[in-house]
Image (tube, rainbow, N blue to C red; front, side, top):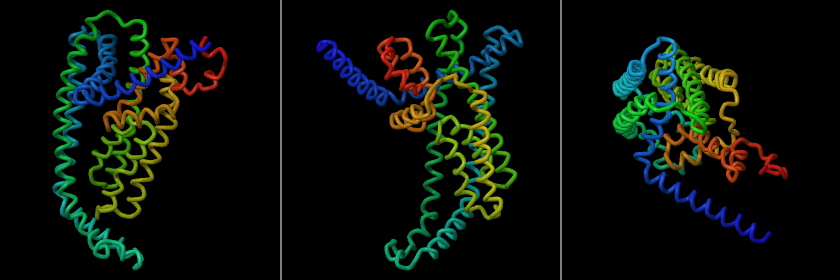
Length: 345
């Protein structure tokens, strides 16, 4: 009995050490791992389009891959044009936004009680100067971010091309990899469709209300919808600063610009997505939230986007080994099963 307990302690210690070392390696290899892992899941999602071209249009594998890459290229071109137009619009209206933001902050300072203003730098005068100094930094940071994303997108594209070309050349997937491919592919396809619907509706609503950068906010809603729990909240609140400093947006339109996208997020996220998705991943919301925090610490925004599919793959792998099956039960939220005497059976 004592020897068995000692063996369990050693196993736990080894798992902890291996986890720490794996986390350090993942963090160190971030510049290569993020594009590669992202390309894996992108290729997995696009492979369903290849299968559709082969099944419905009777295209050979090479032509199906070429058609899929063409569709993906058109989608990326559309995204690039939206980003480019949004940056140009932001630069063109920078002076107007600065003036409006300064007026808004001046109004806010007048609402602050006199006793509280004494604790602010220069009696709150420094707050009104923030837009003049901050917008240039925002534009510069946005440009740097876009350049960085474009460079990483090129690496992702190269990985995706080779993965798609080799997808049909190898034998059909079987065993664990077949299960991973089936579950994760279903998640990616449905999530992409749901996110596209959400982003399109939000973009149309904001455009109808004359909110600047409407299509950019729709694109961000599409991307942020891949981040579980918090992504939809961030996407709903993102237009708020622009709405507040845009002179062409009325007060009623400003309220609708937040309320209607929030309703869209609730309807799509809580009604349509669960109905379409079902229990394909079998992951508990708390486990997803913890995975979101962990991968966000390791890989930032990219880690948050990839947290759900990575956790799903880990759960499937944990289910296949007797020693790690309790971890799969934890990720699925089946804690009662762990307390039962036959949990390990």
